[in-house]
Image (cartoon, rainbow, N blue to C red):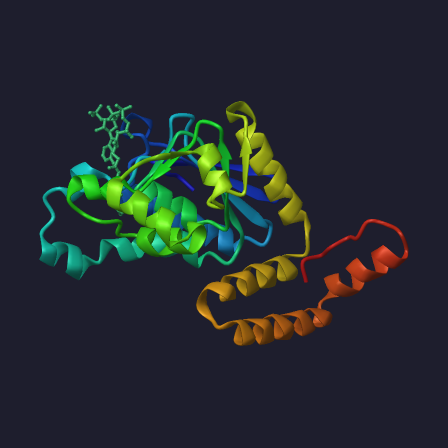
Length: 257
Ligand code: CAA
């Protein structure tokens, strides 16, 4: 895989995807979004990958959509091309994707982080939806995912004022799962990813799918969905192995089947 705007590293069963447009603070242009989508498609098809970490640089996870690319678009170009639909690759990924955020995660950058399954933040992280200051609104799920994540009042305040919030506030309000010192962020994210990637892949994918259902369905249907998933895991090798290993007091050897 040969990319211009992202870098890929393999760490065992974990793929690390690093956004790499440092001079533009990882502003998300069409090329970068296309390369993320392409890399994720490869990760999804690769049976040796169990989890993905998405990160940026020390200064910026991503400072938003590329404003220079957006400024001159017409309504017709934007609507007919529907360029933001291509951003959904991360949200559609079946394998877990962890966002490791240091520095700015603004606008589309914050939206991209929220498309991931959870966010680990460096103590330097700054989150916000400052689109209102550009005369527009969030366009890639910000008004929806932020409300579900941190509640209406705080989401509304951030979206209407464009104020940025630091890592501690983001953790306090539930946007962020955990904070790490900036120089330990990647180590922590890779550790989490490796923990997940070592577990039974069918169980991990079903756990992710079931949690996501909580967004989309009423509680009773979500619980029924979860139960069906739970029962279906009894058809896997890894369920028998996991429970046998517990009873025999040894570590399980998952085969991801
Ligand atoms: N688009 C394009 N270029 C960007 C950018 C963006 N979103 N953010 C930063 N850059 C570029 C700057 O233009 C600058 O490039 P030049 O050196 O060529 O001028 C370089 O990155 C460094 O940026 P600054 O000089 O501004 O750095 P700073 O440290 O003074 O400020 C910042 C950092 C506060 C993040 C500031 O860059 C900023 O406010 N960026 C824009 C944030 C924003 O409004 N994001 C929302 C974009 S719209 C969107 O995302 C829509 C959507 O929902 C899909």
